[in-house]
Image 1 (cartoon, rainbow, N blue to C red):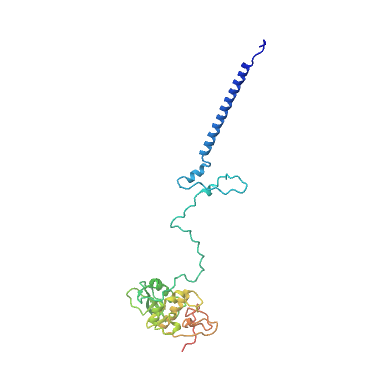
Image 2 (cartoon, rainbow, N blue to C red; image 1 turned 90 degrees about the vertical axis):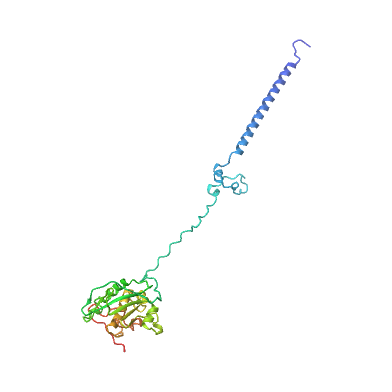
Length: 304
């Protein structure tokens, strides 16, 4: 071999060693990168996509939360649904219903009393209050009795009747008359009974069909007041229930005083208290009092 030339073996061996080293480094780099990628993928797979979903589903035994269907062309990985859509619907409370709507306000009426019972036992409870003499004439004593089950308080009714009999438009305007509410155990000249329509018909011996259950009367020394009329008034009377009660008392007590029925004196005039106004006014106007405010007796032709 000529002097100064190398065989090339050492140089070739060095290159081979370097290539081998580079291959080892490349393999280590690839293996390291592959391991890193594998660890990253594993960690991503094991971690929950949304911690909140895991909290809501915990303990419910439910499957994975459904995902909304993907639109055409959209990625298949949907965004987490809002929290509200992942909650289970609340169960209604047992035994609880929605509050009812407020009822419509009732129309105003002249009387708020419940409907009067149409029948009762025929047993009465007497008033226990007493009053002073009213009027200038000899005092006729009286008391109130109310049928049991009628819903009427005997003492309250007695005070209401006392106010009517003591009114200056009533019978005491005539100096010949006077009244006094009797106390318990005291004798009376007449009694005011407030009775159900059925009992009133029996006490008054009502036989006229149109008057059955509707009328009041005087039977002997008993003024019988129909509970229905006391509570509701009369459709023929254009006044308050309280005014119609005054008419009942004045009309029936008028019979106790010996007064007879009268009729309408003329169209547009006030009906006499002794007129049977429940049968119609015949052109007169409703009136509950025997006298007007000036003391004039409101009379009409006597009914034969």
